[in-house]
Image (cartoon, rainbow, N blue to C red; front, top):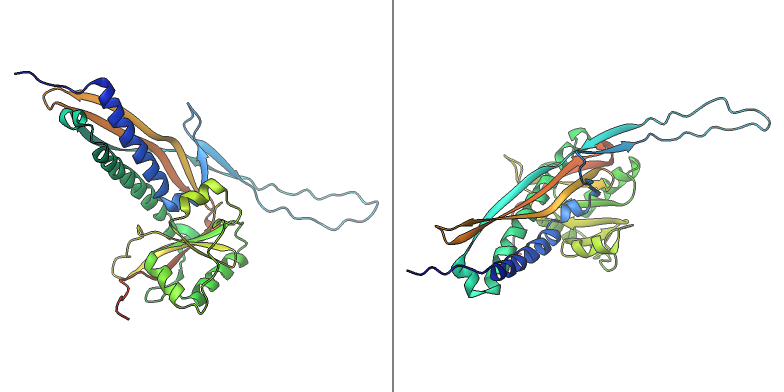
Length: 293
């Protein structure tokens, strides 16, 4: 019995369609880490060391009198490393021979969604530890506009460096919007001080800007056990970091008896807290919203 195998050219075409879709989806569906400070791990490096310096204090001077006091730089460092994540999928010879582009795009979408969800959840997992683990808001409270404004005032009083953003569950953001008499401006760059490329990636998750703070929503925030609330956060971009070594890596392995090619996709990245004092968890209700009001 003759066995037909997929040609190298057909297999490469299929993989290119899948991975192009996966990369696009992963980049556009992970809003949380787009708000972090981004670092790239150089080729051959094991870690990135990020320095932080203290505040400088100036003193009054007297004409003709030498300065005698010196300021302490107060430098501390944080070491960032990456870890691998991966997923394996199988391209059968029959599927490749059929050259079904829509099927390849569907597989790519699944891969991209999976990686984006993983990255987003990894970033969200850092929220609860910010501010020494002391959350703003509390269980059984809605994120109404008065509470949102209070969280922003807290961030200002703690001198969070701009840009400052808020990320929370869509149901919490809805309660904020429904408590407002006037809907705020939503046009323009959603990231105060942000760049155009990052803003493009975040556009589907941006809700509004209030008091020069961007408000974003993600459905990947989970309910805290025993409650109907969840942890979002308000934070400076300098509070949290995303370190990337490899965005996408692909390796193929032929399985002759299966008449298929196994394609393994991996990524190598890490998320970290850089400055605990530049962010705080926001605990508000994220339960199901009534749609029959």
